[in-house]
Length: 361
Ligand code: SF4
Image 1 (cartoon, helix red, strand yellow):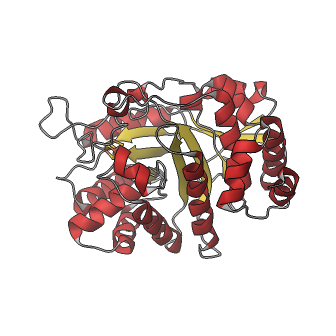
Image 2 (cartoon, rainbow, N blue to C red):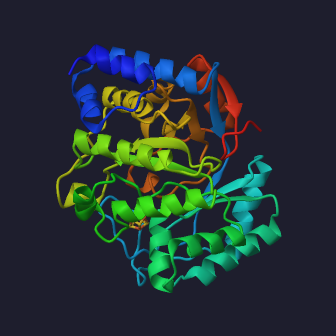
């Protein structure tokens, strides 16, 4: 395959096939990919702005039946430190968030077999009653699949009830790698690739803003990374024209510290900076129909995040006032609002604070 032909297709925003993307990943020099990733970023997001936001993770519960092998956060029901967050704790955390100028919580956690749709809709309603301006970026496709099975409801109905109760947007959590070979090994109890994509298709039909993610660097092949990107692009192609669809794509590397994958299977994170930049640029190329690409400052740290803004990314995500899931596996790159803006400036961009829909605030 001629690299120059692939470069031209990429720069013309022509979708590359999975084979072409895999060839590019293996064969293209990193500097070429960074150049193309940056050019494409300028087409999608003209100018010199890079986004950031203030939100807060709040974990609904750490009880989870899924027991994914890369997760140090989940607990069994009878564990001494198992919890379900109380309304008093939400109030304390949201008050702190608002005192820092934030208005969104990222509500995630385990799939607790005792919690059904009624629990979530009541929680969302209570939070919205207490804080009408609060935005709820909550749950993810695996929870929707779980609730659908538990309540015997179609995905569309689960999503509709959650949205009626106050869900503002659906994170792309739990995508990991959209390959059932990989999922059978790292997270066999979680939603399949097809289920993850089917939930997102329904969310797009309901016009819920969504994001897409990838957790890479464990047991997947490069071809599986590329196939993941193609699956996301194809779903985005089929979204209703007026729907938000996937507003952004966020890749982050597997954090191995203390995980079952590392302890029992000897699988260490394959993360390294050049490969992250390669992935960012290739994601920009493969996802020719998604406007935003967010780097994972929390997992990759300042220097690589700054470089990623020159390789196709246009956003460094949230200051993450509280994050317990990825941090439990060794990620600790925390920054406050001033620091994240300084990082963006140091990289040569103008920091622009945004909301979940990537609108400037
Ligand atoms: S990653 Fe999420 S779904 Fe998997 S075990 Fe942890 S909390 Fe449960």
